[in-house]
Amino acid sequence: GENVEQHPSTLSVQEGDSAVIKCTYSDSASNYFPWYKQELGKRPQLIIDIRSNVGEKKDQRIAVTLNKTAKHFSLHITETQPEDSAVYFCAASIHSGGGADGLTFGKGTHLIIQP
Amino acid sequence: EAGVAQSPRYKIIEKRQSVAFWCNPISGHATLYWYQQILGQGPKLLIQFQNNGVVDDSQLPKDRFSAERLKGVDSTLKIQPAKLEDSAVYLCASSFPTGGRTKNIQYFGAGTRLSVL
Image 1 (cartoon, rainbow over the protein chains, first blue to last red):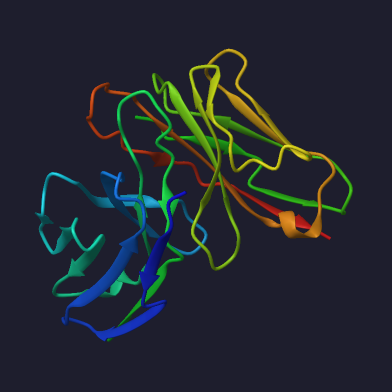
Image 2: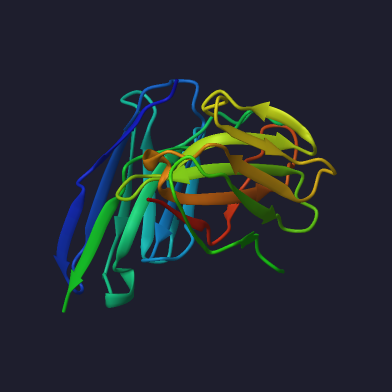
C-alpha cells in the first residue's frame, strides 16, 4: 500500500518568514495530494490540494509543488502569521472515480510561529 | 452548509468494554470514511462506504471493529471488545462523488476522543 513520509516533525519560524514542509510518497499511481491543517482539539481542514497533472498551485500565501518523477510534494507558506501555528498533514490517494480513494496521511508537522 | 456531525465528543471506557461512535455526513455526500488518529500521528483510514456499500475495509481490524451505514446516510463504528491501544480520536469524513477523475474533497468531523483505561 501507499506510504507517505513527512518532514520535519516540528518547524519553528519567525513571524513573517517562510515555512516549507516536505512529503514523499511511494505509490506512483497516487494522483491526488491534499494538505490539511489541524489546530489543537479541532478537525482537520483542507487548505490546498493538487492533482498529479499539475506541477504547482498557489492560493494567496500558500503554495504546493509536486514532482511526480521524484514522488515528492511540498507545502510553502510565505509571510507566516501567528494564526498559521498548527499541525499540518500531507496526504495522498488514488482517485479514479467511484473507487477506493481513502487518504494516506503523513505523520504531521507541528508548525510554530515565533513572534 | 452544515458540517460532518459526530457524537459523542469524548468517551472513557475500560478495556474489554464495548463502545460505539455515530457520524452524520454532510447532506448529499454519498461517500463516508472512518479514520483513526492516534496521538501524534496522522489519521489512518479504517473503512470507506459508498452509499451503504463498503468500498475499502482493508485496514479495519475486523476481529474487534465493525461499521455499518444501513440507509446510506448515518454511520456507526463499533469496537468490541476495546483494547488499550484503541485509545485515539475517531474521525468521520464525507465527500461528494463527482465521477470521472475529478478529485473528491474530504470534509472531516470534529471526532470522538476515546480513552481506554
